[in-house]
Image (tube, rainbow, N blue to C red):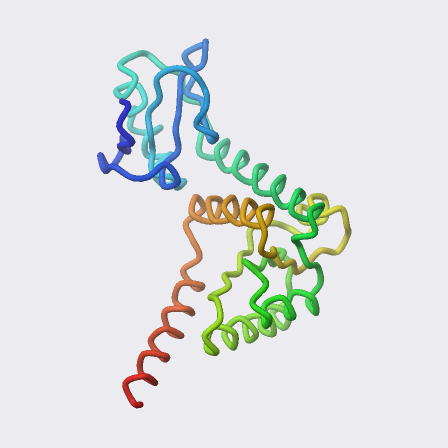
Length: 216
C-alpha cells in the first residue's frame, strides 16, 4: 500500500502520474490530490478512465481490505477538484502578472517564446484558434519551445478565475506562479484524456525538422 502502484493496472509510477485516495472517518473513499491526508492510501492512474474502473470493479475495497463507500460519481468529483485547483492556480498567476489576455497578447507571448501554454475558452472561434496555432507552429519550427494549447474551460469559468469578462484566449507566462498553473492544467488535461491533436501537431513538426536535417 505504501508503494505508488496503481490498483487498476498494478504498475508503479511517479506521484504526478497517480492520484492518491484515502478513507474518511465514515469509510468513504476520498481523493487526496495534495497527497497530505492522514491514513493509509491507495493509488490510481491519474485519468478518468482508471478512476471509474477502480470504482466500478470494487478495487478500493480490495486495496484497503475493508468495507468502503465509493461516491456515486467519484470520477466526476475528481474532475471538479482538479478543475478548481487549476482555476485557482490560474487566478494566482494572473495576480502575479503571469497571464496575458486577448488574442493579440497571446500571439505575441507565443512568438516571443514567453508563453508556457495557451488556454482557449470552449467558445473560441475557429479563426482565433487557427491564428494562434499558426504562431505556435512557427515558434516551434524556428527552434523555439513547443507551446501547448488547452481547451479546458468555458468563457465564464476563465472570466471568473481571471477577474474579467469575455476571456476567450489567455497565455500563461514563465515564472513560479505560471509554472504552478501549468502543472495543474497538465494534470486536468491528462485526467480528461489528453490532447491528441496537440501531440499529433508537434509530432508532425518534429518529423518535419528531422527530415529537413536529413536533407542538409
